Length: 217
Figure (cartoon, rainbow, N blue to C red):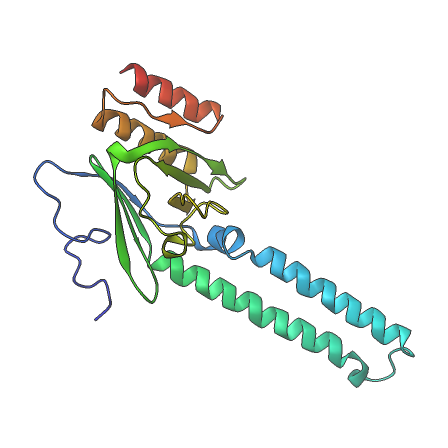
């Protein structure tokens, strides 16, 4: 039995009430999550520099005359490979256990590898939809929540906007087709609260055009 086996609907803590329907569900792309949240490229680059430094030190110390002279370089590369591999494993596990759900009433973040939990965000509390895209089409969709803040940064991480520690912003991280997802969230928020307002913090023409259409509807 898995920790999510008792879910009546994957990604939701219970059966939706009458009138609530699922608009969209998705999960992070684990490779994009590894790069953006676990900084695998940065860590790999760091160990590569250490290996180069160890090689230069070996050459400066009398040259390389035997395989043992490269022990420092080999150890650095081995530790780096293990570290990057572990970060990729964590990213894969995080993506596998994460489901983002958008309904016509709320956004639900089901997350957590060791301590699974669901976070419910009513659409009426979403004040801003932001967007940061990657060249491969994946991206992050941070949400500014209005009203009293009860969300903890550490409880949300890695599904939290970086450095927003005092006022944490939940974030749909490394989602495929990020522009389409952000536009759908904005449109659904407007449909749920026709007399309210929602800001689009991103300047993407594609997202802005969808927002304008939704606002005029």
